[in-house]
Image (tube, rainbow over all chains, first blue to last red; front, side, top):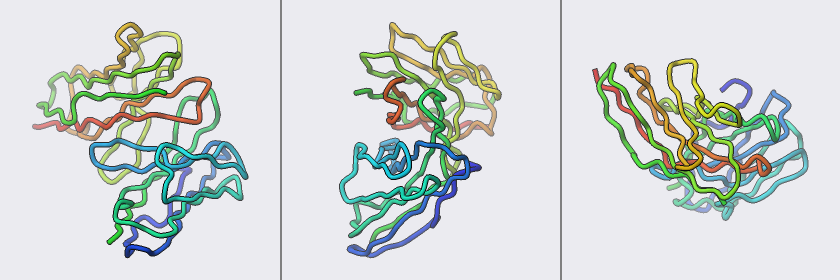
Length: 113
Length: 114
């Protein structure tokens, strides 16, 4: 998982609280993604970015916002956390259109009470 | 849109036995296919990939997968598993000209018993 760092690794929130997850990369890749992983459901794409200053919605964007002000950082925000957002969140990066590989961070485990 | 089906949520197997993890996808266009492995409390790591060319692809640790276009399958196989292969395996697909999006299967937990 070298090259993709997620912070924090663990967090417990109360319903209604807000927080931001940070994904930082040192590989100078253009594409960055936020996924959530839930048991039996694989990984589902929340939001993604194809370059600095750009973001787009994935499969399950509701309740989340993102920003990519700098190429190396991709932020995932929860404005008002809900128990349904209890999950493990993964950031991933990709070099470009034809390389065919995602590099993942180690994950951030979020529990919303 | 693409979708990926992994038919087996769990596969128990004894050490040194062969194993096959099944993956089927649906897509009307050409695709890239991947297998990722996730060890406990870690992120996903690429195991192998098919982009083009030979339909049989291999990993460095003895796994192989074969792209079968007519069956829309990309099953993962290993002739003899080790305890260290215990992990969760995810099949994924993306479209070559829509690389922004990967679609993952629900995962198969491989449990290798001594």
